[in-house]
Every structure is written in C-alpha cells, then in structure tokens.
Image 1 (cartoon, rainbow, N blue to C red):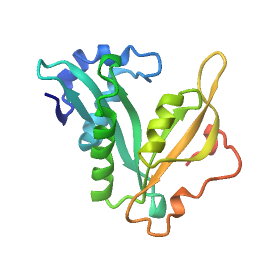
Image 2 (image 1 turned 180 degrees about the vertical axis):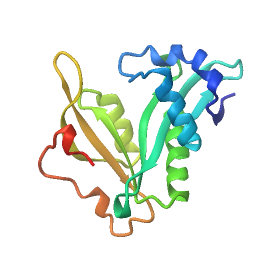
Image 3 (image 1 turned 135 degrees about the vertical axis):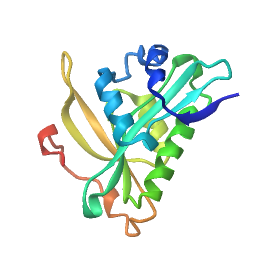
Image 4 (image 1 turned 120 degrees about the vertical axis):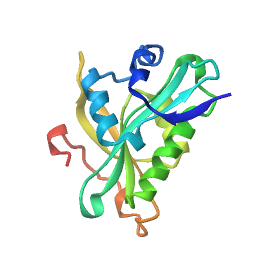
Length: 173
C-alpha cells in the first residue's frame, strides 16, 4: 500500500534511491529546506508500506495577477515504482492545492529529450506553451519545454495559448 503524505526533513536522508535517476534534477539540502519552509503544502512524498520513498513532488505558487500559478519544481518516481500511477497522483495533489490557492494554471519545465515525461504530461492535460532555449546546463546544453495546464480560474484559457517563438531563460518571468 502506498501512502501520500507531506514531505518531512528526515526524508532527505532516505530519498537517494529516487534522486539517482539521471533525468531527476537534484539540488542542495538548503534548496529542499527552503521549499519545505516556504511551500510545505506543495512538497509531497509517496511512501511504500515498508517506509521506502517511492517518489516525490516539490513545487510552489508564484506570479502576480493572471500569471499567478502553481509551479512543479521537481516530480520524480524511483524507476522500480514507475507505471503505477504515482506521478499522476502526485500531480493531482499539486493541481488541487493550486486550485485552492486560486491559481490560473500550473506549469513545469521538462527536457525536450524526455519523451516519456512529455507524453505523460500531455495525457494529464498539459500543453507545450513554449520552448526555452538552453534551459538545462550540460554538454551540450539542452532546451526545455515550458508545459502548462489551465485551472478553473482561467475561464478563457488564456494561460495555455502557445507562444510561436522560443525564449531564453533570462526572458522567463
């Protein structure tokens, strides 16, 4: 049985099995603690009945006016727990929190090469809003898709009208 629950500080000592995936963006401990302190409701974990962390989602609410939105900073599920619907459940929690905060949309960034994730997000109702050139550092740098899903407050779906031209990271609000 899987338990979905809020992330706790001590979880940072037990989530290496999830973070070792090469497509998972990892951060310093202070970054995780900052999210836990500022947006604890957006930091959720999937835990097995034996106490193993199966995956987590980390996000926040940001922006102003009709750009007020939920943002997925990280979503990852350990390889051995994929295809069980955990990512979908974690995304639903973040979207529900964003609805309660009266956000207009939820957005996330994903590597253009991560076709599995892009396909999953599209099945969850996300669209490619724009391409962000050289968003991910590496050799070579990699572009990202900024994917969005409108929430109920965006009655006219303005937040999901795709841009026709790519942008650079410094151009992102």
